[in-house]
Length: 160
Image 1 (cartoon, rainbow, N blue to C red):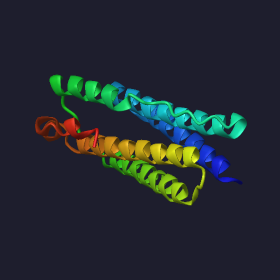
Image 2: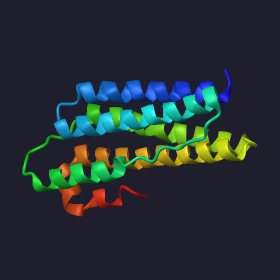
Image 3: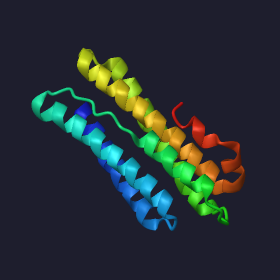
Image 4: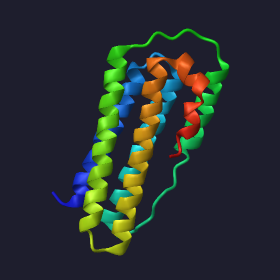
């Protein structure tokens, strides 16, 4: 399996993982966020597929952080009671670990790649995975205790 096939498999696995989380999630806003993450993984897959099939090196920008900030801003305005769920926190932590592994994968592979354009794409993918990691960190903080989290305006730091 070459590096593009391996990367494409990782993206497909991540898409499936996030689609599954969105189906299991009771809170509509979090379902939307998990579908946004899945959609980003689809974009990553398409980027890699285009490189493999036609040697086209196009990176598609994502606006996931803008969309998630909007969702979190809406949540901050709502007044609701939310009980922390340790099982969900463990699942979201697992997702966060996967994002870190994918960031490391793309960064390490970029260091081995000689082709300038492919190296740049892998670095962009690593950066997207890092953004996903921090987005999940905010979700974990939210489901751990949303009232305190919302008061601290942590969601403002999503675009680290």
